[in-house]
Image (cartoon, rainbow, N blue to C red; front, top):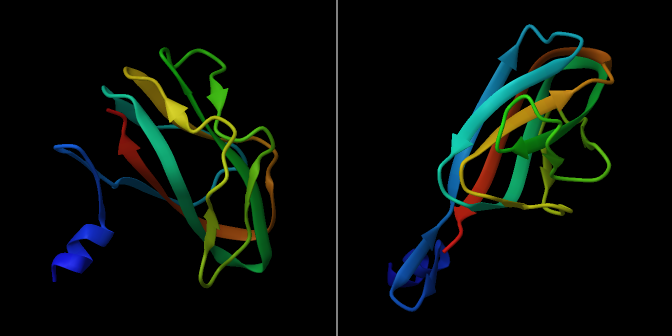
Length: 133
């Protein structure tokens, strides 16, 4: 039991870092997305993004997650090149980021501007992160 507990937490001195998540499901997919996901009061580091599509005819879409102190800014992208979702079964797991550290008091949003291929009926994303100490 204690071993399982330790596998889910990273201990730094007396402080404990827990992995947190934010999730969104988009139904009735528009051609383009520019949607606020959340606001963070604390600095965070993105650990992983998991996503899955519902659709047919080999659905695929490219997207990125942006962040900035103001929502009207262009923002910083998590990855230089857009991330791709193309799985309708086990999902896509993304763990490599160019800019994973998000400063405190930042807006975080999803951008998908290039359209998609196939029929995309639904998109789900979960963002995994830890608070920076």
